[in-house]
Length: 285
Length: 267
Ligand SMILES: Nc1ncnc2c1ncn2[C@@H]1O[C@H](COP(=O)(O)OP(=O)(O)OP(=O)(O)O)[C@@H](O)[C@H]1O
Ligand SMILES: [Mg+2]
Image (tube, rainbow over all chains, first blue to last red; front, side, top):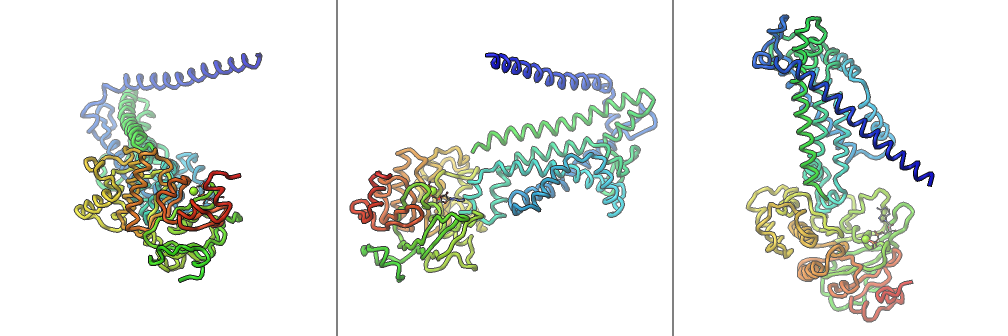
């Protein structure tokens, strides 16, 4: 009897705590977003979106920053997706299950927890200096690809594992080779899950400031990048730069920049959610 | 042809038919688990052979010997020989992909690919480099007709295979196998997940397929075995206890164990 009451109290207690935590998060984000929108929304116009950076707050635009972010997004996708998905396929479908692969796996999951600044330092040494890429878009994208690699690999492996064994068996029994089975059956069947993970990883890459600052991306880039070897800046750096200025007018600019950045990441996350939904509906085994 | 034949089979009726499948002194181990013990068996061309026996006796393992699907089980070990058309299929130079083109398999649970009906049947062709649309369409249509599914799906070939009923899915899986024109069909309880009407359809289909294929079928359904098969092999604890013409097994089994099993009096 006593026990039952105690369980009930715990039950109710946890429910209240759960609801409280959820609302706390939602409310804080809502307050943050609404104050940002209030501060910056009026600033967003054609001039702001197509303007070059400037010392004067009311002239300054974010053209180089958002085009830089799109460059980074595209290049990271081109570099990170094949490498990450390839590694996941190797682990899931090819690698023998021995202690070496297990150690690799554990390290891989740990990599997801390494602070992004560290990736920046790695990128600085490896891509900027050793490979002589300079502080270019390419170096930035390579660095961010490394950063998202663990996320892409983990998400892809999960999606691959969700494909039932019976599909593999059916394919092999038809005389398909391993690669044909992966290409024709497993990848199409897991594409939705892989895409979801990849997009979430990319939205992380777009939002990072620290690693790109470390590899030497500049806040002041007065031209739109035309090739992967050009210098660049990205939205988070531009925002960071403006936030640190004493002039309150720049805070308005920073808020407007944040709105643009958030729009990009929300859009990406929205696509991810949509793909996951579609995939779950289609793949009911 | 082989010395094992006389000791195993006294069935003189279809001696004229060519030997298609042969197991010679086959032993299978999964680690220390000895699951098939000295199996000697000859299967002739264009016949249906039913494999019966209690759960875990090794029927599926035996079936999978002929398309080497056991190879994916890490602990699997085979000694002895398994021959198809007098060729040892476990020899080193055997191309497993080509072997499986010749030896199709239908599983217990229908397992169509999460693709369209058309693509399911076309898959075996696509992985062999055939991509011409007209050619594929012809093959797909023939295969679906042979699997007696064409009339039910001809208007919705582009619909997902998973939208079909279980019985239709299983016939689709048969069509998928027939499309690559094998000569041997391995069926592991192909009707056990289906209702009686769908089961009857599959049985009917199997009977027709016998004309062109050599069929091995695992079944737990004694009536089914006696209805469709020419010969029946009774396995018990990894041993081939009795292998005779089906009517002999069911009317006049030679071993006490066989009789107890087929009459359902099993201790
Ligand atoms: N993948 C595997 N790994 C290890 N042992 C296995 C594996 N598959 C089957 N076995 C073992 O091999 C023996 C024979 O199994 P098999 O599946 O061939 O039996 P079966 O006659 O088909 O049974 P059922 O009628 O239940 O399908 C069983 O003892 C089983 O536990
Ligand atoms: Mg079985």
